[in-house]
Length: 450
Ligand code: PHE
Image: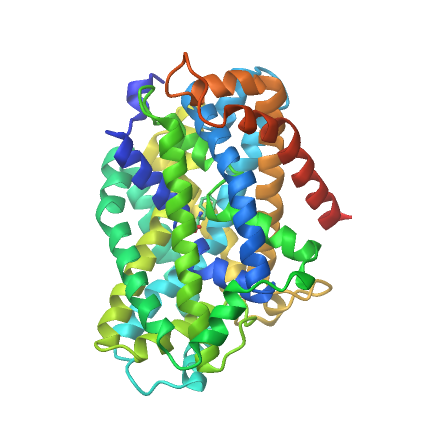
């Protein structure tokens, strides 16, 4: 298909918004705080920030440059550079990973929509206590119908937006609402920091106890860095493929990484002081944010209103992420199999819905609540396999491909804003891509799997 028919971002600003829309989502506000809470708080934050800087940012440039250079979906991108080789399997792994992440991500996204309704009915107004917040979450979790209906609703909305195409669908949503989400987080952070007992939460989050470092913490921080930046499954290859040649990829990539990390960091500033002030445990797991934030809202003037707006914006942030999860598979079907975009979007959504059913029943059906021999619920298991291991593996294979098949020198030419001049940090980037990143990811993955 010709490049023009695939669609293009109308400007670099719009691209940054869409890519940031993919990156910023439940990963920042739901997954980051609870994973940090379960893995030592400040130590986790410390390793996470290192992972973002030394692995996330360079891998972001690998994906964007590969996408823009080939103007293709992940499968087509590998195929273009190394035709008829096994490398396109890495692209397939990305397509599969996107669908599998979507399946459980949309369950949690459904919770945020349900919480909009709860906020509207004034559930989170002043006087809310810890037990009530917990009971509210648990009664939602144990209700199979609520979970299934909101999963279907969320996947349906995603498919509808993707079916309408890149420019009309994706760009419109992100440009207004992401800055608003940021603003609300700042307001919540101010409130959280002035709660009684906030300092205990802050020191849990910001004062690292390095004796708590172990491989588990490192693995989770690494996985979180890739997950949060939407890396390791080709989302940024796909988004990069819609980027025009004249845009500054270097700057756009850095902006996405900075916005995303800032939002996650802010979420922690809201959550941890509230957790300690509320008397909750920071290691509560996936329910953490849903049990904690209602308390922050209940301590604000016009709490129900703020809560409604917040969960609405969080749902939109999740939507711009689910859009990118679907978009990878859709771009593949449209480019490589000439399937019509509408049909492709609905087929992918249908498959993700079916795969999402056991995750949606993770709080209600005993088998999925605690899988035999594994001891985790189905949703957490999916998140670990696809959101951690598969993204890290994808990033490792992509890095080997860029470094040694496409060659770091060629990729660097694509990243350079001015072809005649090396970009700032080009040598460091090549060194990281050729040596440090493959070795570090491989060691961490081996340790996790052996
Ligand atoms: N980055 C998204 C988030 O933080 C999730 C995501 C992962 C989206 C991988 C696309 C690809 O919510």
